[in-house]
Image (cartoon, rainbow, N blue to C red):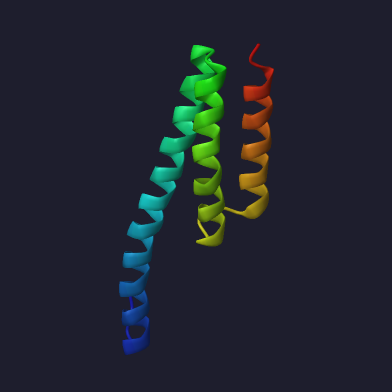
Length: 87
């Protein structure tokens, strides 16, 4: 348990940061789910539009420290390949 004033403050900061990061991660997952659903429906225009909306969210997650840069790049690459494969 936190004993010093500094460690108590750090514990409070971690709680706040955890809630913010959880909201950011959830928002990113929502955008990715929209892309997945558009791919599953087979609508290429909707899928590409959803991908265009998801790209800045993924990159924002990288700059905010929620995702690693390579993780976001990998997700973008795989999703764009799947969207491109829709006939």
